[in-house]
Image (cartoon, rainbow, N blue to C red; front, side, top):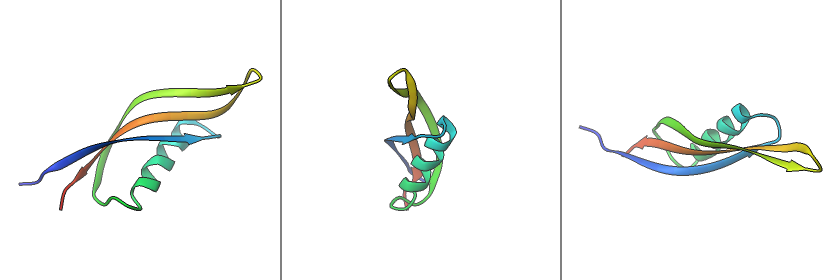
Length: 66
């Protein structure tokens, strides 16, 4: 039997939402092992002078406890 835990993470990229998701998972996996999945709760853009300068995602990451 395994036990899983869920944490919330916010990540940002200047390229795309997909890049923000990848960055969030990759950076989190440096300190948390066994990440099994992610649920993207919210997507937002950062705007400056009428131009999109950032893509931000709020995610819930699930990882299995050792």
